[in-house]
Image (cartoon, rainbow, N blue to C red; front, side, top):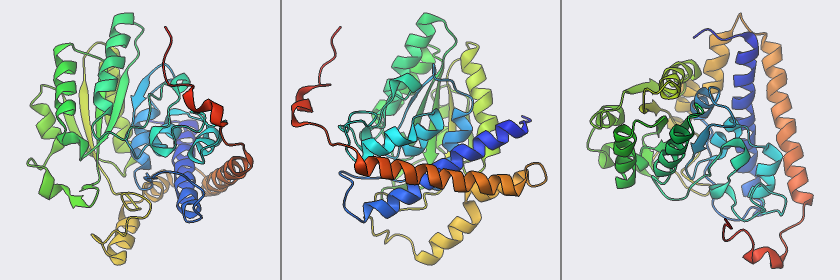
Length: 320
């Protein structure tokens, strides 16, 4: 799938914004000003962006506890996200959701989710709505390799096939369910092959390669939009930080981490791929602009007001 220079720059900008956002949160977390757990997405940027570049605001996605990258790739406002993570009143969820529960329905972001495997059922519902309305929209769930073992995930895939729903299940296989290697927790070596047992077209791609993800996602999303039903993409990847901020990561050495970063950094691989097509100075400028954007978001969040105690009983129930 040939991409224009404008499309390449758009993809790199999103990946760069995700990296800058996550790296800055890693720094900010040590100060103790951020409430709740934080799970960083650095190292997996090519997956979220490779998929979401095919989506519009009318399409839906559901995320995981590691959801910042999905939010940014889908178009959520970075300042609004930072306000939310700092627990501020003007955050995307009024400071009540925090890192693991960011949602923005205006952008089709159904929410990050602390329930392992909680996203696939949500996207089945969104896909059923899309099919019923007949407007050509699709739904995408992002799930980790740990979530691939959950019963709700199996039920969601089966229902999607039975009802032939416009949904794509993306499994981000970073090989680690928290601190447990997938070889200890997953009976089948390939999530894609296991998903094929439900009757879905399923492929496995290198999740550090934006172009591989983008091509596979384009085919699957076009299939869904045209009435061809659901698909699965297993994207193998690596997370650059621990499972959560504060994880001592005793399951890998610093040397292993540095070797992994050198070999699988999505931004580095992207730059190598577009060398000669896109000016390196322009990419450098995007990296710097991304850092400035995140710096400004942090400054705004630090100065913003906390929710009022009277807000505690708002946004609890939906009125129909």
